[in-house]
Image (cartoon, rainbow, N blue to C red; front, top):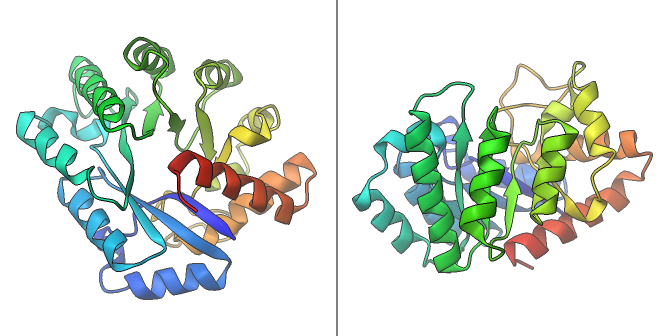
Length: 257
């Protein structure tokens, strides 16, 4: 069994295809999918929760991407906190900081990220963090606002080993995507070789970051198998052993069986 720990199968890219996408994932050995909310607008959250309640092997998270932090106010936070009460919601996020694109002002991103950290603590759910070019600020906020009560994962980790260590020191997991298969990802492959196995998750971030040899096509959860194969190859591990380990890690992190 495999878990795609981060996908956006509730998005418009899969309109009318959800059942087929889930069936293809199952055929590839991917039994569980976490549909991550927060990409685009509030509907990504409501659709993730709806899909999780429709399909037994799908779970949901609720949050807002840092790109859209400028659109998050008291009303939006209230809606998300109510959604987080659903039994199929397993985490808060995605949320975090993105200084690469800066679609929302940095101070607004930090404020909203802090509010989602607080929500994760209140709901006692783990947090799914998007971080790009903001490792120092993200780790500091998690350290100060989480005060030891926070479980989390840095999704689509692409940072250096120093950043990895900062997150690992907080007790966080690091999740790897199809980027690990890219020709120019030697530095990232070097990082993954140093991360403790019990802290590694795998994901597709579907519909984005399609792994080699499928680049140029829409990504989907079935292809998380390619991520496992690439990581296992670099670690000189049997892919089945790595699949079991990352599945156990994801089950433990999201509290699913």
